[in-house]
Amino acid sequence: MSATVRYFDRSRVIVFVLAGGEGKRLYPLTLDRAKPAVPFGGRYRIIDIVLSNFVNSGFERIKVVTQYKSASLEEHIARVWRLSPILDQWIEAIPPQQRTGKYWFRGSADAVFQCRHVIDDERPDIVAVFGADHIYKMDVRQMVDFHAQRGADVTVATIPMPKATASQFGVVEVDETGRIIGFHEKVADPPSMPGRPDMCLVSMGNYIFDTRALLSAIETDQDDEDSAHDFGQDILPNFVRQGRPIYAYDFNENRVPGEGDPRQLGYWRDIGTVDAYWEAQMDLISIRPQFNMYNDRWPIRTGVTHDPPAKFVFRDESAARVGSATDSLVSHGCIISGGRIHRSVVGPGCRINSYSEVVDSVLFERVKMGRYARVRRAIIDKDVEIPPGMVIGHDPVADRKRFFVTEGGLVVIPKRAKLEHLV
Image 1 (cartoon, helix red, strand yellow):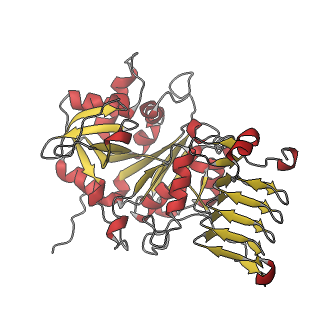
Image 2 (spheres, rainbow, N blue to C red):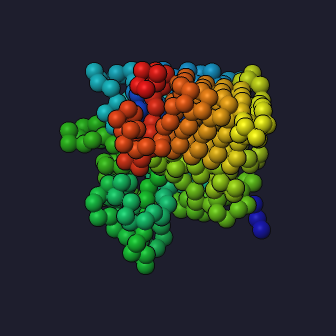
C-alpha cells in the first residue's frame, strides 16, 4: 500500500480558530468567560481540543479570533500555547480591532475579513477556518489532502446526524462525487441523506479554503447589506449558487494515529448547551470512552502545573469514612479526604472532605466539599465551597428555588458562589 501523498507544504497553511461566540446557551458557565475557555475533562479548556488537533497534525501557524469576555481565554493561550518562533510556529489570540469600520465582528465571515491583514502578511495557499467549541479528534492533514485532490475552492467537514436534531446545524446536500449542491443553515425541515430518510449530513463548522476563493468571497460579502456576514448563512450558500467547486469531507473517514477502537471513529460533540456539555464530560469516564484522552500518539495538550498528584486518604469503612473515586477522572492537586466520588470529573485542587459524596457531577478548580455534603448531577464552577451537610441535586423542587437548573435537571453553581447565603 503506497503512502498518502502530501500535496501542500504545511507552512503554506494559515489557521483561523473562531473563538469569539457569546456562548449564551452555556450560561452560567459563560457568565464571565468565553465558551472556549470553559474547563473540560478536569485539567483542560475546550479550546485545547481544536488546538491539539492542529498541533498534532503539524499545523502550527494559528490565530485564535476572540471577542466576548475573552480575558481568561487570551491569558490561557498566552501562558500555555507557546510554540517556537525560531521555527515560525505561533498560536496567538487576535481580538477585534475595528480595522475596517467602527464595529466589532458581525459574524464569522466578517471576523475573518477584519483579520485579513494576517492573510495578506503571510500569503498562504490555504486558509483553515475552524470552530473552537466542539469535542472531537481530527488529523487535519487528511482533510487538507482531500481538498487538494478535489481542486476545491472550499471543503466542509461533515458528519451524519439524526434528522430530529439536524435542524440546529447547517445541513448539506451532495451529489455522487461528494460535491455540495445544497447548503441549508438551521432550517426546520432539513433534507435527508439519500437512502437514509432519518439522517442528515451536517456541517461541523470546519472549513478549508483556497486563499483566493476565500478573499474574493468575504470581500464581496462586505458589500451585501442583507448579509449576516456568516459562513454558514451566506458564504457557503453563495459558493453553491455560483456553481463553485465546494466539497463535503466525510469526517467518518478520518483516522487518528493510535485510535484503534471502531467506536472512537466519528466521535464529535457540539456542546452548545449545559446539558450537552455535561453529557460530553460523562462520555470521558466510561470504561471504553469514545473520546479517549489516554492515546499518547494523539495527546490533548494544555499547560504544565506544579500541583502534586491527587491524594486519597482514610479507610475507615465501619464509619463510612473512605476516600475513594470510581469511574471518575480526578485531577492533580486534589485531596479526597474521606469522601466518595462516583462517575464524576473533578478539576484541579479540589478537596472532598469526610462523609461527603459526589455523583454524576463535574467539579471545576478548587471546589471544597464540606463534611456530609452530597452533590448529584451538578456542575460546580471554580472556587465554590459547599457547606457541611448541604444537599444539591437530590430535590428538584428545592434546587429550583435556590439554584440555576437546566431543562435536563442539572444543577449549575456559578463561579465563586457564596452558598452559605442560600441555605
